[in-house]
Length: 192
Image (cartoon, rainbow, N blue to C red; front, side, top):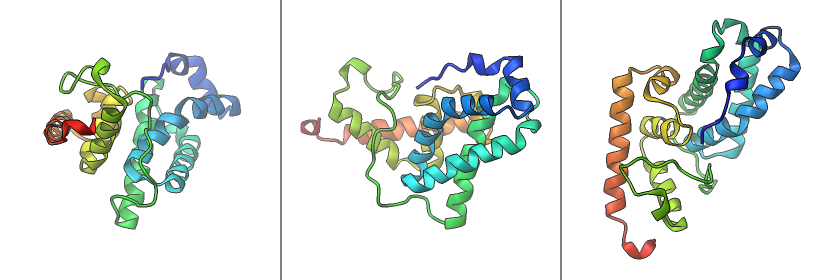
């Protein structure tokens, strides 16, 4: 799901953020809370922990906005904070998934690449199966997959967010696509 953030990348808005304008931070929060929640939830699968990470992310944004040198990097900077906070929590708890919550679709539509099927061919059951398969991916592949196909980031942006080389991002995306294709082949047709 791509979000139009052109109004957030103006010099005027950046100045407001730098001056810690409450209205500007509220606009920023309203714009990013849902996509960040969806991304973090896809990693943690726990509503309470996800809400905590989102809160922590915005606290860090408010505290460290002065460190951001260029407004054009705002979106990637915000996502990087959220991803890092999530990975830090997972490391502290030494868990890579949390039980208790059933998977709910994070978005109404998952962007499809030509590696799968056309969007018109996706039935509701197939959509949910695809979401479940994405959840089975190893964490690093799941993160880059969601950043690319749900949030609409390009590989260089994902590399910046995840602090990984672009080649690593491309490799993880390729492995994720191949795994999902292979898993999809093994699903009986009568399930969808």
